[in-house]
Length: 479
Image 1 (cartoon, rainbow, N blue to C red):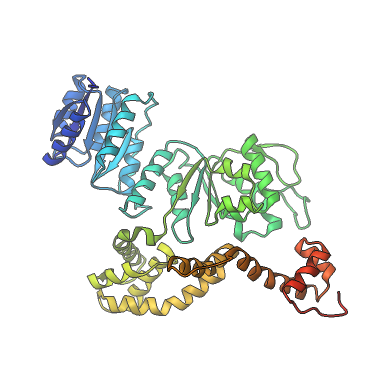
Image 2 (cartoon, rainbow, N blue to C red; image 1 turned 60 degrees about the vertical axis):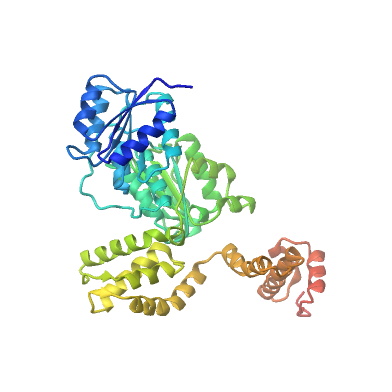
């Protein structure tokens, strides 16, 4: 079926114009292609075309500067922006200046055709106000496909107040993404307030979030302003949301549902005028299954999910990130350094359990400790070797029970992959977990089986049976 609509293509690369003209022509569209922004602008002023596809860098004008002009004279005309400058700021500027979509080069033709189809059928939306952030330091770095998708998602979200859930391993940059959503969003003139749920004592979380009245609890000598009030008009970043205790989860859910809250000990409702961005390194779906996280709260927070990939999944970004961190080290007063190719290759081989944070720390050490201007592979290898025991200890200290179990179980799964038969894995794992759990419970209660059963949530007879089955030692006279 032939589509009679016309697509205007502007790109100074003849090969790109040819590929797009052929692909769009085969799809049934009429195509008019040019290498200059001036010609594209003349076509737009004449009323030609039903869709514009433009490159950013052209000989006579920046394509991004053209977008708001097009939207002013023809608000209904959709613009798709392409760029080989595949940075976070390019995606943000394209979205904020009114582009329908941003595509990094090289692009997939199927994806481009799908974008064209959406652009020609999507309902009209208000044109966002132009806002220029020229010259600002890039908050996110990387040109891998995974990072490009994050750029595009964050760029779209800068024009909305939707609640966002950021997931990813420790050190992947969850707070950087949260700050980017705020700094380039509609609430950027308001405060950005962050609270780490894992760092607040359990009994103080509600007071920290919602504030408290004088005399609400022992030690409350004056009214305390909570983070919701502090973040009014801006963004509230709830880091490590998976560590929030159940009672605070219930109150947070009520705030998200009703749009208002009360202070601890207070009666008058206060309107919650914040955008919520949450983050966690935990698997919240598994926490829901284990009864540790409310399912209804999860769906309230998980309106737009963003998963940050670990550094090992975007190894092509490591050289760019390393240069970025060396530049930051120089800006902070450390000597300027460069990496030779052997150093870059050694960085690519490392698994980076600490992700980008580990890479940044390594770059700062290299800048501070090595006199040579160009760092080689041997220096990188030496630093990684010295840091590995410490990093492993830190990772073990911060890992959750789930992560520890998964780490140990990986050996069993690896054996299965290697063709070695693993039998009764479920029963073996249960036995391995039950034995130390019961042993620790009995030790904590000094052998008192009634107290140990209560601690474990087991019937006393069930506990006795398991003690016999697992052949656990019993301290006589204390049961």
